Amino acid sequence: MIPKLSVGFLMKYSRLTKEQFDSLNFEFSKFLASHSIDKLKWSEMKIKNKPQIDILLDKFSDLVWDDILSKENYLIHTSKNQLFLFYCGKKFMEAIVLKLKKNDLDFRINNVWRSIGSDFFSDDFEILKSKKKHFKNRKHEIFNLILKGANLDSGKLYKSIKGFLS
Image (cartoon, rainbow, N blue to C red; front, side, top):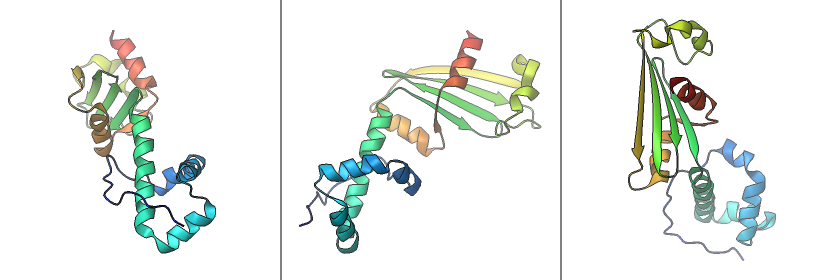
């Protein structure tokens, strides 16, 4: 007997990628077990009940995203001429934005820091800082930044630059 799940389920975030599911294989197995689904039932569902499979994948994805986004997060978004560093605390978000005015430098290149060197405070380089309270839903604000291209980060660069600017 295959368990029935809510057909009207709406995701809060987005489904994890295959690679993300693969890296969370153990956690996903525990999730399935909590729904009384073993390996045999899972194989049967994949053949006979694709909508239920989609619901389970979506529910697990939301649980993972919810867990990640409930923590304090650091995000980074890099383009050719701009580097956005975010600290997403529980009550507020801080951002440090570094802008290159020189076209011959590119933040996406690993050795850009050597090229900047002493020019850090020159007219060819701009540093902006901001801080704001979260609006309605902190988790959705962070997730929207991820959808726009930001990636979860360790925060080392953010902390280093923030310390340097203090």
